[in-house]
Length: 235
Length: 235
DNA sequence: CCGCCGCTTCACAAAACTGTAACATAGGCA
DNA sequence: TGCCTATGTTACAGTTTTGTGAAGCGGCGG
Image 1: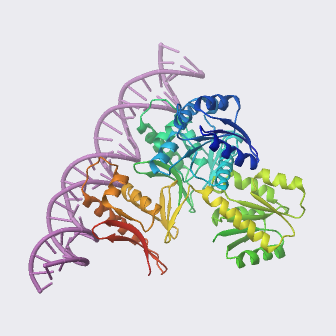
Image 2 (image 1 turned 180 degrees about the vertical axis):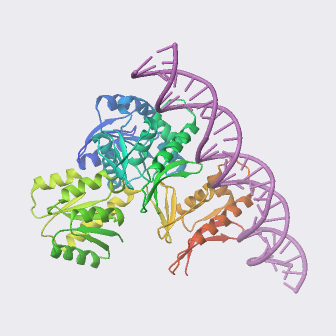
Image 3 (image 1 turned 90 degrees about the horizontal axis):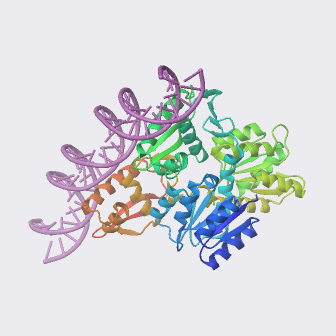
């Protein structure tokens, strides 16, 4: 597994540590020491993944993350956030903002590399247009068709994108903010509740094509106070 | 270290060899003799790791690997590829396709087990964002699910947060003030007793899913005059 | 220009979750 | 033992959150 990785940290020592570990693991490494450079290199260097420190002077990792998500060319760039502490609130915020994973310092080189690889692997299919499958449901990005047991399921654009996003990480809970960010795009002003309405429609569409006979059933699970997750429920 | 391992090989002798070595090392083993069965078991059996032969009639290890990677539910399944020859080109191809490690035949039992263990160790943190486990109870932050012996336990938001907090530091005693601060957020004024009520609810939910047969029992221990702690009590 | 289609918001009902009060117990101590 | 305090539990009424039908809008193709 190869890949070009952009690392961003204002502390030279930390930067060096990251570089060494990632290069040892066979990755090509780009580096930046502040948010501005990071944004520049993210556009110019076409990295496959970004590892960025949470706290930095000037533009923090949060800001960089937001900005990248709002630019079309970097909207899908996988991002791993580094944080000094493992506070749950930080973690939630980080993921809300659009980070794909979150590592707390200190971390082992092994963990770093494992997460980088995992994330690259996870995101590749979206880029490579591979068919996503979960609990009997098929979603084909290249044809933008969704089907179950060969039967086609028609979805509106929004429903399709919601489903596609959730199928990338089944079972994972997405907050409404995350969904709005990634499906509608960052900075768009829409009510949270709009997500609910689309989820309702998505549910109806999926239900209409539910597998006739048993086995596991695909459902959109509501996590009260948080968001939604694609999930398989025992029949 | 425990784990469920799916082994796939079209040669019964080889399959037996793998099974024997892995079971001796304390792993639970599932097996399949062809690609189709392998795919089926990979989904249904929820193995933690897959060991598959490179060359097989019909669907080869490569194909199986590809397909597994394209399915959301098995995208992150660690895979070890077995190959007769140690050709570098094979190795590269294998890793490219998504295998996580590569063993050439013939191999020593010791090598096999060592690699399996190494891979499990590496992938455990990366699979889920650190699933919390204590006394048979599992809490997965990314799916926000709590389960015991595979059975889901539904918790309200407050109960979930309380449990999550306490599972980060099992056995540690938390005062009501600490719990209110961390779960409700400081600045919120609620009666201390509210914590008691939620603890009661949490206890009830956990009890309802209590392990049927012995081993240690998870309890919420009350520290009179102070607070609560998650604790394991001998049966 | 009309009509269809999908998106958003609104409104209202249903469901889930909460905090508090009240009452029942248990623990500690003189 | 008897009293006083801390905790366990339950019931309930109030809130908050979610599901969903329906209306309003705006774009686009015919």
